[in-house]
Image (cartoon, rainbow, N blue to C red; front, side, top):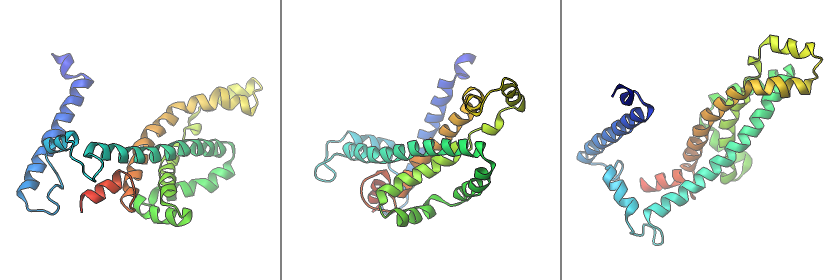
Length: 223
């Protein structure tokens, strides 16, 4: 019994059950308060019924099809920005490791990017790109870019450098045999941090403009 109670699956189940209970309590409280719109926090049973219903919401799609279509649009934009952010962040991390000048120039801007809120960044990026669809991808890329750009090249012990130099290894061999393998755990940590950030950013930026996306759908459902 103790093994079951301490297992990850049981802990996850408890957290999900607690979330469901909390949601239902909040939904019941909202239902007792007169609000506009009334469906601002529906019961879970109401959400499930809406998803399973064959009623056409916009004349051609059911609620489930609408959610899937908008989720696909949001995830595709977040995924595109995520991949761009991974590639550019890793390249910058490599350049900062190779050159102290690049690090001194780039690092303050990396800090500055983190200080700007997503909703404040969106109008700036949109004005630069002139396309809201492109700006959504760019913002997802920027938020992915920061954690990946701080990949742990600096974490490699000095002894490993000295060992490679004692073997007369060149720069390429040092990075491929020592630096890059050593920073892989930090790199994947950056990926885990940036993945939800890219999706969240994509949803938040969707709320600023019309079109298709989970953020747009959320904004429309509150009207």
